[in-house]
Picture 1 (cartoon, rainbow, N blue to C red):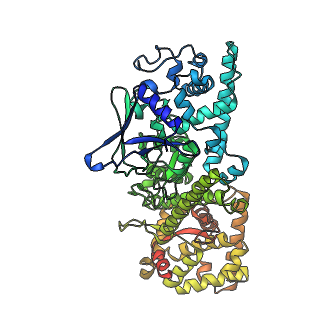
Picture 2 (cartoon, rainbow, N blue to C red; picture 1 turned 180 degrees about the horizontal axis):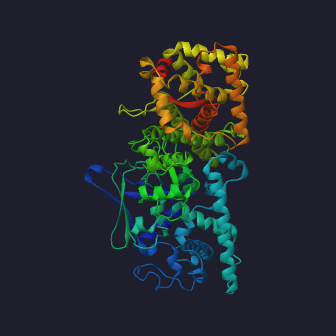
Length: 611
């Protein structure tokens, strides 16, 4: 209902050139939160309804503490060059000047031109942004971006306050009233209620934040139909919605994720259709960065690696505007982010994207590697958040924790949904195209052996018998638990290469042969190192040679194990392929921690049949 504070603010606003539609009314709840409701029915069929019009002259920004010579084009800004805060102009960032200026208006109370507006602003006890979280509240943010971000911003704000006090004190200004709590309050007001100068007033040039009285009383609702416009240095908000008497008139802050909403405004929205998971990637090798700058000049503009340019938003299935998946098939991942992962895959294989794309099998392997890298990041992100589950109360204990829980659970859900999509993509080959190129899916050793059994049952028997000769068992589960999975993969790759080297006609038409031929084109056998590069690699090669020798001694000498191709070079080739292309799946993935390799996409049909 209308209150003395709301009425005082409305009267001050109108007396100073503002406009409030007769159909709109300011009301205040029991917690002193002011909002705007419909005084009577509003019919959208009659067109736009002008709700509020705010003149530039009543706004608060750093310009209020600057002389007219600073942005003289904005002649309707009220200037107070005699204010204490004016001594900071030009010596600290504009945002810091604005924070001190607002704090000063709070200190002088009724002596401020903005007294009714400042009195209507929320107090420190009403804020629910992470900067006002206590330790028990911060527990709900562990593992999320917001925990580190809020700590970093808090440190930055404290440094701003300290520097500002030192400058004012050095000029003989009494700073006794400018407490840290007051400065934090002022900065939070700007963060949670400020409008960008270009959005509100279409002011060109330097971007800065303004407080627009009454406009900031409109709360946010996703997809609320409002329009913003500017006319003669006046900021105008119209609604396009039909409203009944007493219904709240909402603003729309735009497509904001829960991370943005909680950090800036202190709330989060369940089932937020604009939600996403923000990922900032660390510096890439210079050659990779140069390639990305060349291929995506509109995105990677900085000469040096820039964290902002390397920040991306992952979007879950519920997002209202997922990305175009053209070229990579994953709607929730920005195409530029995927291109960066793929370029990194080329780099890890000691080639450039330009060279790698000409090697068609290697290009396909790097496509798969980019997906693996992305999946690993998603698992890591989800684990970082959920690792704290057991320490949290069963239910939030206050409003801050409630909003943090909404944000936290939404992050986990988006990650879970994207992991599920990627796992299906990697396992079932949904990204494969009938374009004549080799395509790969991730598969386990069991998948590889099933393919061998299906196409060459005799060689399959020879392989398992040889494994048993050295390891004294052919039970894969037992061997995996003992840590031999990667060794068996290397031996399998060598055997597969041998049995398809000089194939009869039936072998030439096999999927296994096409797969090994593609792997061989991506990894020529002569390119593999043979000795002395790494002590652990030498030990691994010795183990494999011993396994082959054991198989040779115990089996018919005319079988696959005694082929002339067995050599240190072949073993080094198998080690290089498995070492580069192999991937240890997460224990909580669909593959339950198995060691996976790129396999021909035909295995995806077998996987489909397993469902």
